[in-house]
Image (cartoon, rainbow, N blue to C red; front, side, top):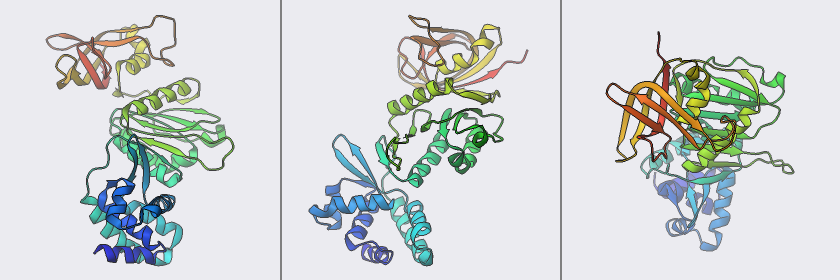
Length: 353
C-alpha cells in the first residue's frame, strides 16, 4: 500500500489526518525525533507534540527521553493494532488485520530499534508486552516481582525460560490465598503482602512499576540500559531476602550472572566440600577477548570490610577459582579487572562422587 492508502485506512479507524500521517511516518522511520516526523509527515511543527501524545495514549507509539531530546519509537504494528482492535472496533477487524499486515511489512524493513534506552509507559498492555519480551530475552538470571493476576498472563513465558535453563526468581505480591498456586519445581518463589512490579532479565531488559500513593494509574519504567537493569536486580534481591519462602526451586544445573550470586546461593554446600563443575562465559580481563571456560570450582572468596549479609548487600570482593584441565583461573563479575576472567554468565552443576 502507498502512504496515502495507509493513512486513509487509519482514518477509517478514527484517527485524524495528522495522527495517521505521523503514525505511518513513525513506522517507516523505525525511530525518529519529532522534527524528523515533521519533515517526513507534513504535520505542522506546532501540532506535532499534541499528535504524538495522542498516538502514545492510543498505544501506537512510544516516546522515549534521551539526553539529546525526545525519540519516537513505533512498536510492532501487529501488536499495537491488534490491541486497538480488541479495545475499540471489533466490527472492523478485517480492515485492521489488512492494515496490520501492511504496516508490519514496512516495520520489518526498518532499522533495529532495540538499542539501550529508557522510556515510560502508562498502559498496562504496553508494559505487559515488554515484560514478555524481557522474559524471552533472559539467558541466565531472571527476577520477576508481580501480582497473581499478571503472573497468570506470563506463566507460559516463564515456563519456557525455565525449560531453557534460566534461573528464575518469582516474588508474588498478595495474601496467602491469592499467591497459593502450583509453580514449576525449578522456580524459586517467595511472597509478601505488597511489592512493586519488577522484571529484570540478565543485564539486558528491565521493567519497573510502582503503585502511586495518590494516583489511580500506574506508570512503568522500561529500559535496556545495563546499569539500570542491574539496579533493578539488586533492588529486588534486597526485597527478596525479606520475603516469605513459598518454594526453593533447588534443581540443577543453575545459572548465575556473577560469582556473588553463585557463592551466596551455594556457600553452605561449598563449605561442606560439595564439588561443583562450572561453565563460564565471559572475557579475558587483560585482552578483553570473549571466551568460554569449563572446570571444577576449587575455591571462592567473599569478603567485605564490615560484617554483612551478602545475600542483601554486595561484598567488596567476590570471586571463584576455577580449575580447568591445565590451569587455575580466578573469575570475577562482568566488570572484573584483577581476576583472570570477567564473567558474563555462569552455569553450575554438582560433580557426582
